[in-house]
Length: 255
Ligand code: PGA
Image (tube, rainbow, N blue to C red; front, side, top):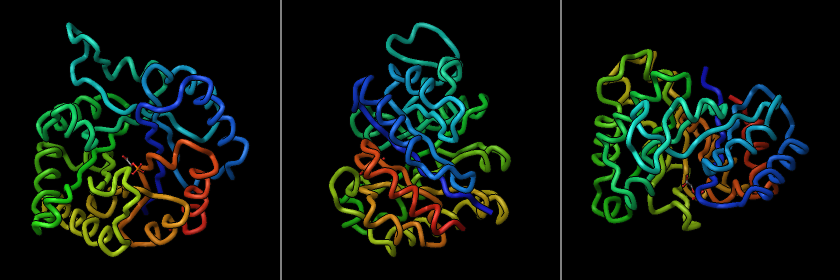
C-alpha cells in the first residue's frame, strides 16, 4: 500500500525568519496524521533553523541537492553525511532546474542516487519532458530514458526506497498543469517501466509524485489518479495558505 507523500520544494526562496515562520504556521494548522508523509526542502543554509522548528513534528526535512562524494575538494558542495547531521530525511535529485541550468545529466543523478541510498535518507528522483519534447510526441521516450539511466544498477530493494517525481518541465512554475489524464498516463507508464526493470511488486510499491503547478484547486483531481501518490510542490509550498490545502486534499483522499 503506497502512502501519499507531499513535499514542498522551496528552491532559492524565503529568508531565515520567513522560513521558520512558515514552519510554525504549518505546524499550527496541520491536521497531524501519520497517513500522509510530508516534507519541506529549504535552502541548505536554513536546514538547521527549519530542522529545529520541525523537531518533534510529523513534517520531515529534505534537501534540494547533494554531492555524491563523501568529502573532499568540491568547493560549494555538500555531502550526504552533512545533510544527515542537519536531520534531513529526503534529498531531491535531478530536478529539472538542476538539469537545465546546472547541466546535471542522468549519469550525475545516478551517481548521486547511489550515494543517497547508502545513507539513511530517501532520494526523490525527478524526471520530465520539456514542452518541445511533448509537442514532438517524445514524452514517453524522454521520461523512460531518464528513468532507465537515472535508476540504472539499483537493486529491487533500493528501488523501493526511492521516490520518483514526474514533473513536466513546461508545467513547472508556469501555472500550466498537466491535466490529471496527462499526468496519470505518464505515471502509469513509469510504473510499467519499473515492472519491466524490476518486478510488479517493486513497481506497485514505488511512490511517484507529480510536480508542476500543483495548487489547492487542482490537487484533489491530480491526487485522485490511481498512479499519482503525492506532489512535489514549488510555488504553492511557500505559503501555509496554499500548501495546507494540498495536504488536506491528500488526507481526504487517502488511499
Ligand atoms: P511549481 O514547482 O509547483 O512552482 O510548478 C514544482 C517543482 O519545481 O518541483
